[in-house]
Image (tube, rainbow, N blue to C red):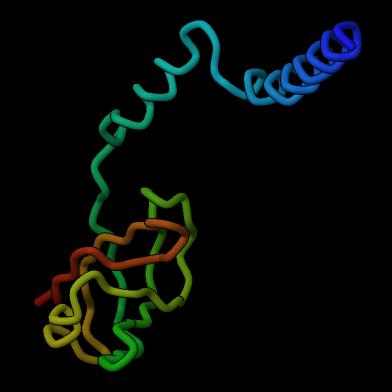
Amino acid sequence: MNTFKSSLMVGALGALTAFALPAQAQTPSGHDHHAAATVANAAPAKEAEMSEGEVRKVDQAGRKITLKHGPLKNLDMPGMTMTFQVTDPAMLGKVKVGDKVRFVAANPGGKLTITEIQPLK
C-alpha cells in the first residue's frame, strides 16, 4: 500500500507541475516587465494637435458630431467625413451645422472621440 501512495503522490505532483509550467511560461522574465511598465506610464510622444473641419451634423441625444475634416496627424488618419463621440455633451451646444471648427480627436478604447472643439471665427 505504501508503494501505491508514493506512486499516487508522484503522479499528482507531475500533474500539478504540468499545469504550472504554461502559466509560468506566460509570466515575463528578466527585465521584460520593466519595459512594459515604462511604456504604459510614458507620456505621449507628441501632444494631440488641433485639426480643422466643418460640422456636418450634431446629434445631441446620441452625444455625437459628424465632421468633414482634414488629416488627423495624431491618429494617422487622412481627411474624410466621419462621426465622433464627444467627451462632454456641452461641446455640442457650442457648434452648429456649417461651422468651421478646430478640434482634438482621440481614440480611447477604439472609440473615436472629440475631446476639445472650438468654432472658428
